[in-house]
Image (cartoon, rainbow, N blue to C red; front, side, top):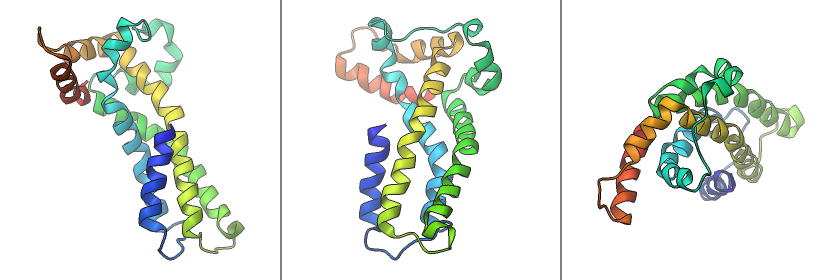
Length: 182
């Protein structure tokens, strides 16, 4: 969550610090609003399977039976999708539906208190990353639940098992290459 805010804050500072003020519906704000839910969901969960076998070995992660979370699965049916990237895109779509309206409303009313005054670049550099830092609170728990369902967990286990006798580095590389496919 810290890196979801800190990384974009540094990037936005380098890109936007010396530019003219931006309006709430300008390209930078719309770019953050439109790309972040899907990008955040895919990028934050794509390599999560790398650590799942070790988390299971330590008792930190395990299978969650669908009967334990029936309402959640009715609300979020995309969690059952076996291919991780598609599951993450479903989660990103839901995040976009819930996240973009408040972001754009706050951006509109936050700049000049709704009087149409432009948002200063320094305000954008603080405002946009703060919203980006909130996304993982929604995305990560649901994404990890998707990995914990029996069918998806079996897929993670199969993809993350490195060939016998692989060293630590080879196992990590193997998992890193296969993780986005889980």
